[in-house]
Length: 352
Ligand code: OGA
Ligand code: NI
Image (cartoon, rainbow, N blue to C red; front, side, top):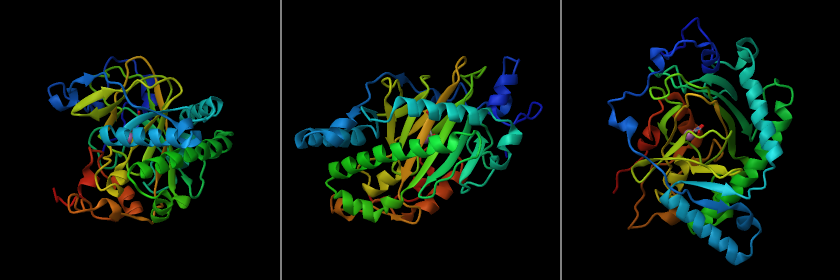
């Protein structure tokens, strides 16, 4: 079990604020300079952009075009930027500020939310899962279940009001994107909504804080992983650090101003019977700047059994995944070491 030392600060933020030495505690060394896997080439590539306004308000031919673009982005990348999404910049800034205040609370104030179980609706912590990991990642996080039942910490004072509005807005964006994605697979969106019980979809609001790190080349914010669920909708504070795996290379993501970064999750891979794979991504840290991201993750209802859509199973494309209750998958993924697609891999039927 990994834990913070150095006069026991309770978060990476406290550690970073207090550190005067040029080195990080050994427990945070998660990259070995000799390991080629950690230093695969970083390439610059243009990431697909999706015009949300055209998807929702465009003429039928414009919508069809965006649906095709969405399908292509999911097939080629599992990752895209969303522009013209309609979420007010002011609301997003307030959400970012509210998380900043939450991270800034003392350990005592955060108290009841620290070190909780993976299915507790509000959880504040450091790294990913220090119960099972032998290294630590240079990251503090907050995770809050906000749908179908809305939860919020009571501090900072405005958090509840802001997060309620922010999560409702990003849920609308996510649901419209999902409809477009089902359409791009030739699926009926109301049938998909019913099969996954999306009216009672599971939604997590999370934030990641990556303070400046004295040895950024040795630490990681988050190691290579895919996300559970259907879609992750991420906004960052203007400091880059997210990398996605594309055709064997890590691509350093530089989002357009104001855009959201969206990636498809493991359950999209299952539902689509492998046509739209969840994308591997990771977060690197900076020597100078504090990076923050806010994440709205959308999944099926926790009780929904997620399995490949029968419309996407054929002789040419045999059933490739076992079905699983989303809640069971999520619990397992959150309780394990974060490593690539290790939980999804257990469901593969190895038919290809
Ligand atoms: C995550 C994640 C990346 C980032 O929260 O699952 O991958 O850039 N975050 O913060
Ligand atoms: Ni992720």
